[in-house]
Each structure stands twice: as structure tokens, then as C-alpha cells.
Image (cartoon, rainbow, N blue to C red; front, top):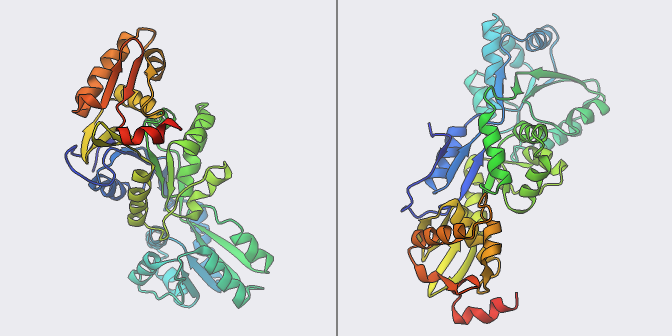
Length: 386
């Protein structure tokens, strides 16, 4: 298990070196965090929700008994963990075999390969599964078959199914929900608050979402803390929101936030997407004979990773907004968080920045005026017109 926040080995070269990624997942967070760290990212883990099994819940028990007593025509299994949890809960109530027997004689649909695996592990066989793993494709199949007068049970999984149930009912179906687990706020909200603080202060480069409830939970907590406008501004401009799929992205899109999503709705492709997107967003400049790439909490100088203190990164970003131009000490002072009015703080932070970069000539001191990035002569003309 990785710590709440870990940084990788600075000497290791990888696509996410120098970037910090927030992980909001409660389930499979270790797997996602390990994938990100292996590619060089620093990971800030803040589970935005927790899964509460309903093994002793009256709603699930009532739904299970109702399906055993009155057979459905179709059962739609949406998640592997949910389907397994349902069968395990039924076994605990002494209803395991009656439930499995009922499921053997209905049209059993599986949303994707993992659900198919859970169904077959229970000794059952699905009748059909969409190649896209999309609930929209499941809905299309059901409507093409005709749903008027049919009883359709859907294993709920805590995420919104926009229009799914409504479309079935509009077609004349009786829809029965099977609530296998609920999403709730985490018992320890501290990590979520730290992630929010990091996002609004631009201490994160990306936030990953693997479920819509996690996105809703984070947005709700930001609103409770009065940080929602700041969070949305960060997600619009500086912090990349990466979602595992389109359903997960819905709560963010409802707030006007554009997200990136992999073509395949899996953790591996999600991480690969970040490996493409974050380096492409980094600022790369030819400075003093070196290639300098400015990342979230570090800088690549000719491909070598140089971790930089937060104050140094603030100065470097301020200088890079106008590469080659002199930036006054007073302006750099305003870029330093909590520096007050003493311009000596700029000199101290600048000295540490030069030491961290390992190439002091990257930043030139312009006497009585300020500092500038020593842009290569060939690049001067290009950036002079910016």
C-alpha cells in the first residue's frame, strides 16, 4: 500500500516524472496509484467516498426475495463487485441457491468482461454482453427486443444511468432496482480536504476519477468548504480532470468542466492517457544551451529530472510566462506564496532555484531590474513577439 503522498525516485526517467496526480478512487486505488508511480508520478491519494455493502440492508433483501418469488424476464449485471456482493449477501441470508436457480432461467446480460467473469464464477452463463461495455448498447438491445410488459431487474452500482430506467419504463417495462452497495462520504475527510487545497493552489497537475459518485463527492465537499468556484477554475485551466469513462465524467460536465477520457474504460488506458496529456501540457524552452521542460513540481533539464521547491517553481513559472523578458522583483515577490513585502525573499528563493536546477546560467540577474530566463538567441525573436 502506498502512502497518502509519495514521490518517485528523482533519478528515474519516465513520462510522468515531475507531475503530481490526485487519486479519488476508493476501490482499486492501490492499483491505480502503483501504475502512476511506476511512470514517475507523485500520487496524492484522497478517497472521495467509501463503499458500504448492503449485506444486512432491507432494500437488497426485499429486492432479492421479490425476484425469487416473481421471476424477472431479464437481469442486467453492471459490475463484477456488485454481482459478487449480491450473491454473497444472498448466501448469507440462506437465499443463495434459490437466487442462482432463478438467474439460470432468465435472460442474463453482462455489461462487460469483468461482469461476465463474476457471472461464470457463480456457475451461471450470460446470454449477451456488449462489445463496448456501454449501458447505452445494453439499452439499445433491450429496446430492439421490445420491453413492453417485461420485468427487468438492474443491479445498481451507485453511478447515474441517465435515461436508462426512464427509457425502459417509457417502453412499457417494469423495472426493478437491485441496490447492492451504497456510496458514502469517507469516515476521514482530511485527505479529501488536502486534495482540494492542493488543487486550488495548483499543487496538482491532474485529478483522476474512476466513478461518478467520487466526482460528486469531491464537488460537494468543495461546495461545503466554499471552494467550489476555485476548484472549477483550477479544473478549467490548470488541473487536468481525467475520467475513466463518459458516465464518470457526467457530474463534472454538468459543472461545465471538460474532461479527458481513454478510448477503453480501464485503469491502464487512463494512466497511458495521462502519460500523453501531461507532458504535452508542459512548457518546454531552449535556455542557455539547454532544453528546459517545466513540469508540476520539477524541471527536466536536458532530460534530467530536477526536483524544485514550491517557491522556486512559483518563480520559474512567473519567468516562463514571458520568456526572455525581465521580470521585476516586485512582480516575482507577488508570485511567492506568503512572502510578505521583503524582496530579499525573492533573492533567497532564486538562489535555491538555481541550485536545484544545477545550471545557474539558466536565469540571468539584471541589475536593479529583476531576473530573466536566458533564452537562446535563436529563440529570442520568436518569443519577443509573444
